Length: 78
Image (cartoon, rainbow, N blue to C red; front, top):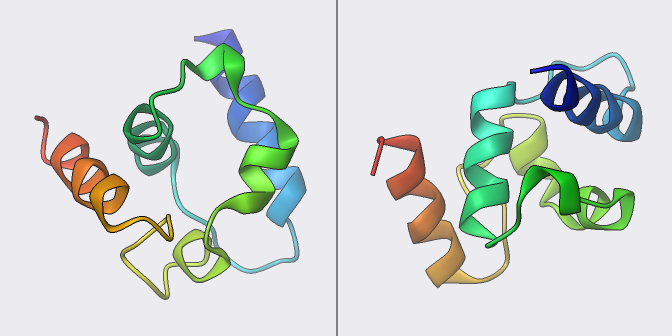
């Protein structure tokens, strides 16, 4: 679990401006929807996420509708 905590800390550093951000569960769903393993996530990938999604203003982390549908499926446990 230490690696996931480090990954989430990186996510928080990228978007850390005092506003609440998505939780680790949502971040992991986005990572899996993108076809990545957590250890392959880069800072550039984190920066490419939809900022409105990061701050809870959108339900869609990606520009790609298919990836967003897959993200929703992962969130629902599928």
